[in-house]
Image (cartoon, rainbow, N blue to C red; front, side, top):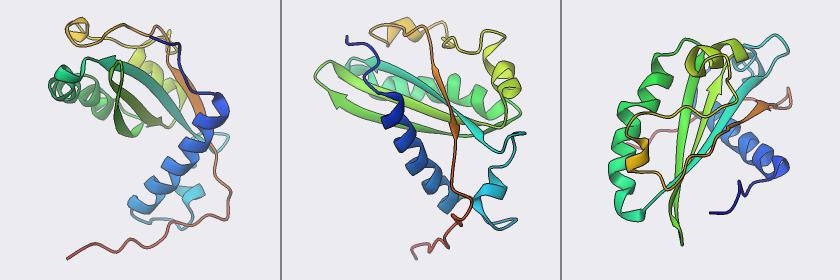
Length: 156
């Protein structure tokens, strides 16, 4: 398996796109997206990115397992602002990219422990994952102040 295939620049562009999507889905409270995401002292949420690859035949079962383990732990950790689970089929299997949003590094430590840059794994992960990446990546989610959450029209 190749090393982490994303550059910091491409990941940052993707996170801005995801943050804009989140802004469209988060109900308006105080006006601008900046004010909704202004939970950190310096004004930025933190995105934590983890990547894993499973055999394609185990992808659905792994997604179910993720829901019971990591995703449930994200949800139960104070300071977690949500998670996106992205997946794609590749020649080596099914790749999962989890992008979780946090209000502070302290909140991430509540989830991951004091060595918060290390990936968190669960007992049965080896039954699904082709290998364990030892580290995750963290990015500050930065949005221009003038971006406002658009109104979202619901179907139906």
